[in-house]
Amino acid sequence: MDQNFLKRLIAECPLTDFSENGNVTERQLQLDKYLEQFTDFLYQNEPQLMEQFWSEYIASSEVALLQNSKMLRRCFIFLDCAVSIYNYTARKTRDKKISQIAEHISVQLQNDLNQYKSILLLAMNGCFNSVIVEYRSLYESFVIGQYLILNPDLVPVYKDHLQFLRYHLTQLVGNSTPEWNKIHDDYLNKYGQEFAENYGWTKNKIQNKKDRKIGTLAKECDLEDSFTVLYKFSSSYVHSSAFSVSTRTDLSQIKVFFEATMHIIESEITDYIRECKIPTKDAVIMRNILIFLYQDFEKLKE
Image (cartoon, rainbow, N blue to C red):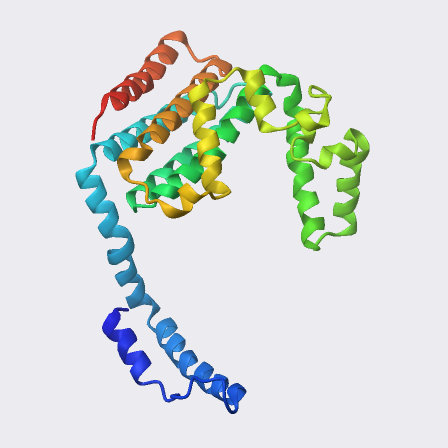
């Protein structure tokens, strides 16, 4: 669709009276009928339109940014190495008994690697503000993982909380069943009503209800201040502020978010390798691959 198409669409509309006088309802029906013809035309030509959308909105942005941005190319190199190291470690432990915390880190790493990939795809298409927003979720995932490493006895409770939320959601959206309601209530009977809260699984460690939040977990984990600073900044994008609504971020401004993301992924992979008890030689080489890539990325100037 271009300006000429819209110009013709407006010009050919049979309805000419757009005032508030006369039979407004009848004119609205006439306009609805005309616009339905337009949308039907779009839906009938979806395959051709998808090709156009790909070239105009997706591929053109991706190719241009990847060609011109060494920073993004290095981000993809890091992602590919991180995925390969995770897969290598997972295969090494396929037939071995690993701890519950190692199992949790494995699941979390897969999700976080996918989120890192999402962040890169957003950046490739010029959606720089969305990159900042996505960092917030990645940070929270990282904090939860670090907190569970400090408190491995909470892993079974956390897994129960995950299952509980599945049934809790069915109640919230109104499609539960008596069987699901029973499972839902069994969890509450086991852990108490506060288990329904987002951080209800931390109750045994954090007695004060008001302190059961991501900030408390981060403080317990003694994370670097830079992680938290970026998290607070990204929160202003999630909840919107004058700055996030009225500015256009460029690629150079989000480099720091990629640095933090790489640091998070490297830390999680290090935790995974340690918990899986990978041979020292393998562990040292694989971890240092990511550290070298991360340090080289920090030195980049675009």
